[in-house]
Length: 338
Image (tube, rainbow, N blue to C red):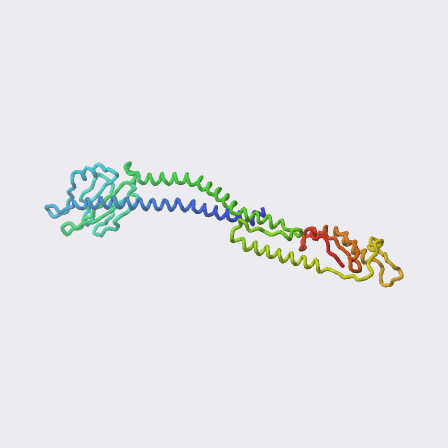
């Protein structure tokens, strides 16, 4: 669980899932807004065209009052309420001059003695859900208002039904589509991060025994390559420092050396070549041997080719306690004291 909590892959997937969820909410809302806006624009444009056609036939009668003289085809169209359309013609005081079809519920958009409150409207009036457009016309110095309404619940009006059905179908389609997209996204992220995962395994495999290994930048994203170069440079410096430290621990002994038959004896406690020699009790090399043995190592002595003796401390099996700089058996083999 701790590994996943800091996983770059998990973080990317979570961010993508959040983005997909936001998109799943935003896309339907934006689609509904655009569809509703487009529907309202088309409705109002159609209603304005109807209102303009009706207004052309409002004339002044013999008594000087406005009257409507619709052609037979338009009268028949509105009388039967085709497409859910109805209209009303009112004077400036709001008095009804004409309306079709007979008995149709037409909300009044203009109050008496007032200019039109709105040229277009959408709302609900009792059982009527409607779009409405109002236009005005001057007839013999009198203002006449023509209002055209379309009942959205009329069977001939299918535009709103199409929008509602589209949104339902869109919701049904988006759920599996987003799930599929999330799965594909997770697979894509895994594929993109595969070189990074390989890189992580390679880095974890480099221990004190593999200081000559280096990380490969093959297939790794360019954003990570500077980190690889820095890591490899650090390994170069560490390897050089390790070799320098190993070669630096040397003691040149130009003494008489150690005879071959004494090379095992000198590591015993209290052993001395000459007991008459003062200042030595014979425990120094014994302590070194015991410490080396306690750490899984050993110390041996051989003849120096020049003069004296060579003491070799074999650290192959040396393990440092957890938490120290080197948490693994020493790979280098030996450190020599010459």
